[in-house]
Length: 244
Image (cartoon, rainbow, N blue to C red):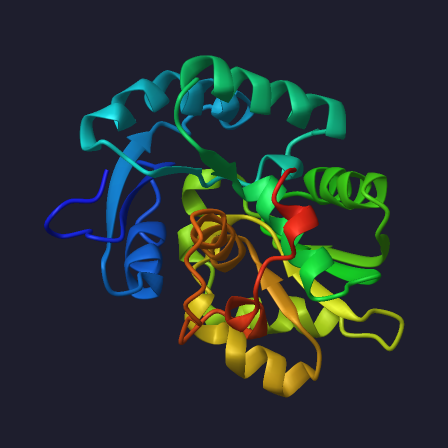
């Protein structure tokens, strides 16, 4: 519920305890009158991240949130639309009375909002996991002619990727046959880079954290234009995208 530091609403954000980038990114995107509260889950076992999130979610009730964000890009770990539907149901079972968004659903809504048809995907981990992300977005009707990966061995090391390597990854998928860039994996920490990337690449860049926070705010009815995060964050959410 709204409180003294969040008269427009309180957002509970579930983030990995090993990730130091996501909390400051969400705080940097926070509009006046919103109170962000962080809740941490363990990603030591990369394959069991969904279970870790579900274990942590009951704690979020402690801040009386108006919205809950599940921040991880689960589509980069052998995911499917069916598994995402089940995960959404599992969250609803844990939080039957609270609105929530997931990063995976947010990126789909964001791509549709910017009019993406053919996307280039940047994923921080292995080729195999990047191919999972490619297949997930193809299942949602997007063509994915290009994908690249940063070959990070474990999730907790994504925060160490240097800016030059991030820019190089975008350059690898920068071909004439894509209309939108998609970055999945919130640990990379690129919200402050997105407007410059769009200016350099000449096309929209949808990035996990920016898309997720934008989606959460829009689902709360907050239409503020954000001052970072790319062109998406200055756009409204179409009514038909309010359900995953």
